Length: 347
Image (cartoon, rainbow, N blue to C red):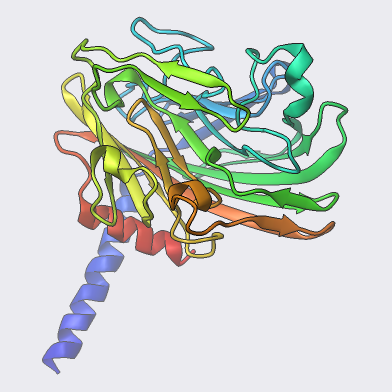
């Protein structure tokens, strides 16, 4: 009987917690501007992010991204550089979703910096229509896009649905992306993918030494080190990996956190049990790239195993992620992230 009473109390408290969260949630406004190829998202009448899909970008992005206190948590460069912004990897813009090797084309590294003579080796994600743009307690944005080569031949059709929500100290993005093959499509195991986010300078791990990174085509990018005392971030995964040790490891979630102004700010990405190769590998670099890549197993395991994904024409695959951005006197706890991951896994 005591156990039943305890169970009943726990269920009641869970229900109360849900009601409290619903009461504290702030209204979400989704504003579409077809003429400018963008959709603005406001939470509690404050800017949260903008979905950008102009023809000048090689992929659609959410940029910039604000915490609930207004702090911008994504890097400004290259669209709107801020003082002190690193200027490496110009294809890292806000939050995006793509992959380095689909049918031999590189969707990840494509940007204005690639010379026209080499563009044929890269792929585009071209958004052709907005499917939903609904305001409310939860904001909804859905779009359709085509993953194409330079000749605009369609390899994949993408349908993505975002749900945006938040309260006084938190913002949540839930992303569900379905990719349907218009022709046989092979995701060849590669390092650079799939859900990516480029962090603001403060969220980087401090490193005084320059670093060099080489992509699969042999292009070398130098990330400048420095001791400007602005970068003060670090990573923590659900498996307990910290700092640079988070890179190449698996986990249900990973968070990056730092002091930004007077607040602690954290960004967590949560994987979903239905995703391919769950739990994902974390392509989480100290210089500010924060990515979940389930299809980079070969490099992450030093060649011990690999994970390729093949879709026959007409087949599809779906990826689900939850991104949680929190600010306040303390960073979001492991217990709370485990709770959010468990709830997300049941959706």
